[in-house]
Image 1 (tube, rainbow, N blue to C red):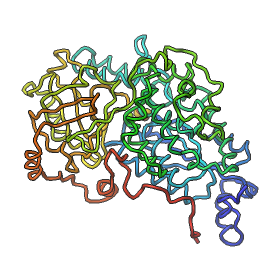
Image 2: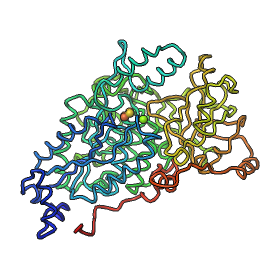
Image 3: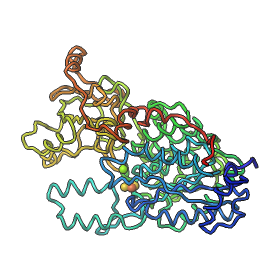
Image 4: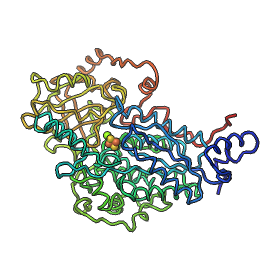
Length: 569
Ligand code: FES
Ligand code: MG
């Protein structure tokens, strides 16, 4: 084994070694822990403010058992934790900040290998981005999904929130029923139980080869989740000995696999900006078009909400991601290396599909179309995305008049106004919800429908914005328009009544306004004053990249590696 980097702290003689070890000993650490055992950092996004990760101290204990068993020395440390449900204006604003916390914490400390514990949406990409920029041996352990919610004899999950709230607005669900449902939905530890962004991220890390097989789907409350954590603790010690660093796993082929598997499971649109950001850290060239190109060959296999019927619990019982990987072996890069030290194909050699209602076959897929389509045109010169299997087929080729909302406040003020001039053929356009414009690119792209159309029984219409949508949401929604309106994209210039053409089969999103008129409008356009003149948010607005690049901060691309040149005393 190579000399461990932790020995640059704990193996030192004289004053420095004394300082590095002495304070650690106040935690009751015997001296031999410092004598050349691989030090394993457990990067924990536990927080009571991130309920989806509320069980992570327990999970970390399981990891520690495994590390000790394999002869390592585990040290758990906290990093900034991002909970989707409480953080305002959106957890996405802080993904890059949390990534910086993880990166600097890993590099600055005597750590030889790292176990990343993530669950709720942003906790997974943020710490992986940070770890990728350090490039130590790294393994990911997800927190696992909640058990299915149970309400009035049926299964419910996060996807139902949108249905319940529309039913409540229409007066079909009383306030009492509404509150009963909210107590029934989150009945166990874990993250959202549908194929929302958290489950998408758990599948992402497994499909990249960064986890032990089955990581994505084991419910948080299932004892096998703890077993996986313990086995991951054992494995990371071996990975340190093998010098199996992240960059050996995060190859271009691994990213292609991840796109294909995300398509097969019907993963969230948020996958796009997170995978782009991770590729940026890994130094792998990945374009928005790659998402369309690689997912277009893949049918939807997993019958999971929001694209289908079931939730992660059934997905696990059916065989989980390994069953999907096995089915797709002829299509993916099956020989890529994973954290097990084996290839993706070897990892799933003994996997089985136990329920073809939940996981369909390539020959008889659940749906033919899957994945992400990238549309372009003068309304999104650098591209925008749509998830076709969450959309209404009849709207995929459509021309309609724009009904424009200048920002989210304008939208909230007008959407239920009976005087709003709108019918179901119109296209709702929401501006200033992009990375800079909100700031932080919130999940408001699946904006609610006008009440007067809901009352008429209309269930979907085209909506366009520079924002994101929740991985649990659905509808004919064009998201991530780039360049965003606050950065002066043509989205900023759309006016009420303009004709917009969406043609998903032709990958087209066109604003039917002449270049001359757009140029005239552009002259009058002023960038919105966001009123942030200090702190992280100013740094974010000044440096965030557009969504077709993954919305990382421009100076965070690439890696700084694991070296720290100077001692602290
Ligand atoms: Fe945390 Fe959905 S809110 S995973
Ligand atoms: Mg979400």
